[in-house]
Image 1 (tube, one colour):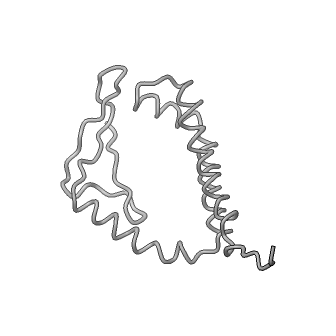
Image 2 (cartoon, rainbow, N blue to C red):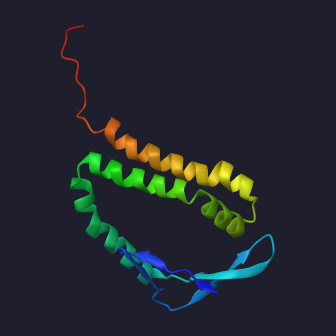
Image 3 (tube, one colour):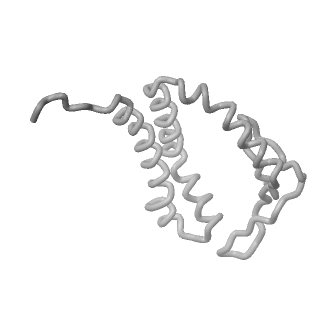
Length: 131
């Protein structure tokens, strides 16, 4: 049975506790995978990794950040069916609903986040006229 790992600092890693929780398919009531029983150590590792990554991400030109986030959206679109099936199994909803709402929204949100950096990247606009 599949064991899901934590994604921390660019790597898939086991939880510090080495413990896992049963992950149930709610429509069948059966365990279909195991998820990390993460604790404070894992959270601290993830926060440290995020803090380490933030300076380079924030200094990256908005055009590059846009490309990365659009690539994420492209990957979601590419694996649309597979992701909808996974969402259906994980939440007990229909694949049709997962496609129409969850996976569609994930892709749309990535596109919004990607282009938002382009729309809001300028300095404040100040009107210097007397009117």
